[in-house]
Image (cartoon, rainbow, N blue to C red; front, side, top):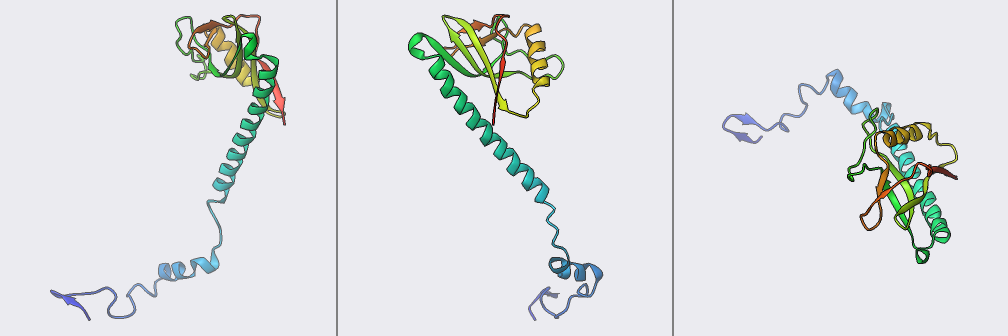
Length: 167
């Protein structure tokens, strides 16, 4: 027995006075009786999110390569990725309904003008809400993007973002 000014070590004296309690018995039997993994749904959700992100990056890379062939830099084209919609002063414009900004996957610029706008997605993703958000942002003045040199470039009303669907 180890004593220190009248105190006993908790390990001394064998069985704890709580050793026979229901709680202690439940804790001792927890592993054998309860094999439920409460984190499983969260882990599955995270794995699915990571897979979706990787699939999305692969789709975007495929489209980027196609755009580089269609719009070669040697002919004066710039392919801007993840371009925010901005106002005439260069400020990012947010949707008045959701409070969110809008980044377009790819915007093609030539001679200081937007000539193409592309959103890349899966074959099954519903883009109705995202298209509506983009329209609201444009109505609120978000009709510009910055090119790869930082220049503010107008997005003409004739250029609509097209949805490029891939597996």
